[in-house]
Image 1 (spheres, helix red, strand yellow):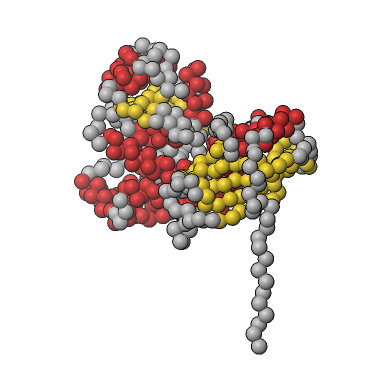
Image 2 (cartoon, rainbow, N blue to C red):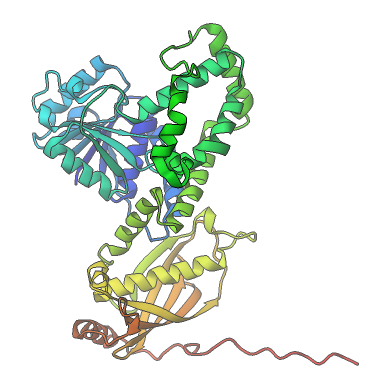
Length: 484
């Protein structure tokens, strides 16, 4: 899939990062003189976030290339994401340039937060392939994207975006500002009045959201939250009890305060007092860390956005294994990020097990025990592990794992991994016993002939003696008798 990105600002940069981290090549056009720096900084934040978000080994990233013109960027693209400023005349001009050079079957998706597809399609040559694909910041983490425009193009776009970890929501009828921004606008209007009338500050409003209903919204949304508020009687009871309050003069949703200099100065000053101790990049990293923590909590419950994380991880695990030439097999590599370090500045213990586990997964995929095989109700479970820590592993190191098959029978296989640094020094080893199981019956069963043949072919390459430490447990340490 060849992807083009027109615009590399906050939203465009997030799109670029998500596509590249998911393994796609992206050609970018952005005339801004600082575009490469801005996109580079977004990419750095996104790469760090994905390393911490996903437990599965990430795919090799795609490449970014910079085009000198829109025509160059889109000339052979299958999917084009437009993320230029929110001016309809500018978007029409950009769309015309894209259509003049892009293949007729290429999907053209706009990140617009407010314009309808019918407005974007005015004067278009191929209006049927033009959509709204409106994401939320940060695009590389938040999965939801509003797809507006319908038809075959919407189906194709949704399939692509789902494959890179997003949650496409296809909106059947177009409306100004779609769905998400209309909801945000209602809260934003009321918040402006609360500040204008001197009732609350920016921090007080944000605290009420982030310590209160924002936490409920993050994992249940609006209607499911209110269903619970209705108690055992459910939503019908809630509407009957609280519905009349909608007629009370609580809000000013149809009225907007004048954003005069006084109100702008007040909001800006309060915002500086609230958040000015941090730079924008620092706030972005704090935001990302908080989101990742919430995502992990929801993943543990298989709920909401946690499902998109699990789906993406399974996609990473299911991809075709790296083909290895020679023996021992080199099927897995990893890079040690800052989040992998302990208080000594060394790779923390559980990350060794993660690297070894990922190498085991790569081996299983290599012999044919892949996602399709597991979907048939069979897998291999690790029942014993022995790890030896031999050398220091520090941040930024590239780790390469060499894998040997030490033995197998119809129900078991025994693996040995050596984790090496860039210099070829072995910094850790892991020995693992796995059982082949029927996951539905939850019992050990014999492997099929095709797996046995794959194991036979691998072990036939191994002419070296087994490592001396293989099969050896932890050395016993005897207590010394207390001196008299």
